[in-house]
Image (cartoon, rainbow, N blue to C red; front, top):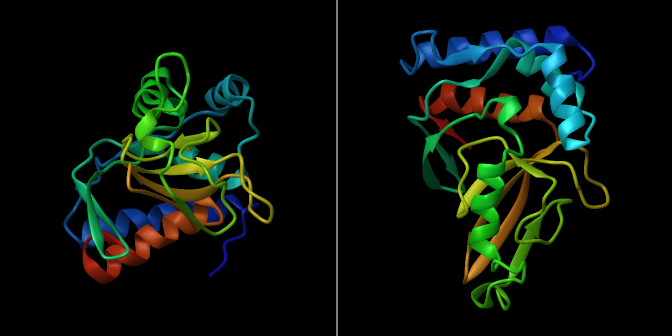
Length: 201
């Protein structure tokens, strides 16, 4: 199903399905979700980051503002990534996360570290060929080695707010668009929990 990103009811149905799938898998007792964020807080975020938040993010995060814990695993391309945590919306672009990424790739003077200068970068989908972009906002557990981002600097043919997965080590960097919008990312989580009892795609 391709969700209607203008319909708040779609977000409510996805939230209910997500909660039901977690409960059926024995992952949560209902306290997994943080309380939803208010419109005024969304406005503060938009002003701070100078972005216009796509409707699917607005509607989902008004229902729940991320997860309370990070004890779920997420598998991508057959490999497990533990400690999956959907970050609260108002944590996007916080200085701690940005400093972590910058220190991983760059010297104090802002120059790229030597070990990254020759690193090949592969891209799947309409995302930028980059080690990291300042308009990629971590929506999961912040990690310099891998993370999922809301992409607000998509390449040609991409969509604002598409979800990208980026994995980095000095030998290779891979950037991949895993969902064209946040509703579809939530659908991936729901379908995987239902089929595997874990978050998996």
